[in-house]
Length: 211
Image (tube, rainbow, N blue to C red; front, top):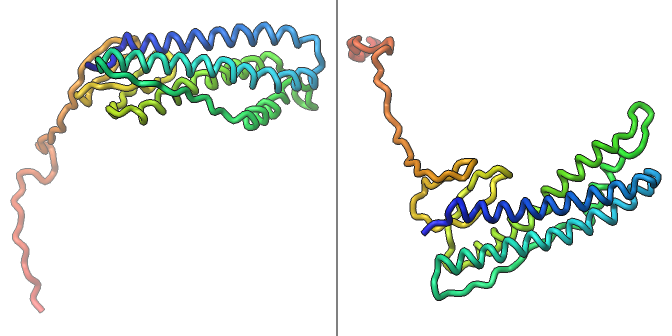
């Protein structure tokens, strides 16, 4: 029995809810630091953003691990599997990226500060960094799974989430809105060469040249 689109949507909705919560907390923190100077705002973001990524990344990876265990129990009756969580992001690399991008908070000679652009970038950063632990958790436990399930790329409203699939048919796909369909690969057909310029002409035999 394959993992259905409803099962995948359940995981995607959980991850989206985690992203919504972290963005709401970022919005509250953003307005609190607006009274600070740009250097103080930068230093505050260097501490706050990695803490948010760690906190909500752990939540996302835990949700993904619980989802994997639930799917495993439904498909393999009488068997147990303990999923592992993965949230091994690079704290130093994240801080370097934030420090580099924080230049948008400062006025340059030919370019004014763009705090709104900085906030948009932070939302995009958190969206990616919060979802990645869930993907790593699913990928990690798929390699640990003794049944070695296949993978199927499920196209959802958010970026594609790779999930396990126990279907035997390699052409199982799910549309963007979660509708399931079976699509068999179409065999290639050789097109008739009716309009080829060489069709209908008699092939001349090869003649040897005299010395």
